[in-house]
Image (cartoon, rainbow, N blue to C red):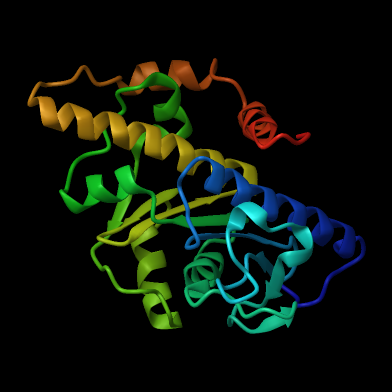
Length: 242
């Protein structure tokens, strides 16, 4: 892949800036991020990544950031466009993109329920119909490391733990959601939190839950509304147009 934008690349990149900024506002509105956490999207056909900049004196809540605040980095984490520095953990994003050509968007948060479920080693059982479908059927890998992913080697190790999955728990740290679009990666993170909250509550009861079967999940995938509808709903909650 080239590090340069191809024909029509500027328009695609402009759209991704809007989408990444909107994802950040949605995740903040849903309580999955505070001043920490970041999302990104790879510009198709390039090694350029649109990403939220590092929290700083000028960059504050992701709930207040727009498309013009987003920056562009390469797969080495170098700043290509923008005046603010990349997040220290940009290697979460870049190393997943290196390892997974199918991934075009990454979300990293410290969302509470999913992180706590991973800390206690609880299973992410598919017990709620829609969240289970949207959260990859409850399939989530674990990277048993609480360290900040501040270099390529840690990022590579984390990406290996993600493997071919869409969700990974960074144990004692947070989560990663990786998908073919920023809309999907965002909705997956939200669904993951809903499913994790249900599983934590079930653990507290000590009762055995009724788990949705693989066959039922297959049937549900054919009937649950598409990601775009969910995305439009969360955009509407921001008070904007989808």
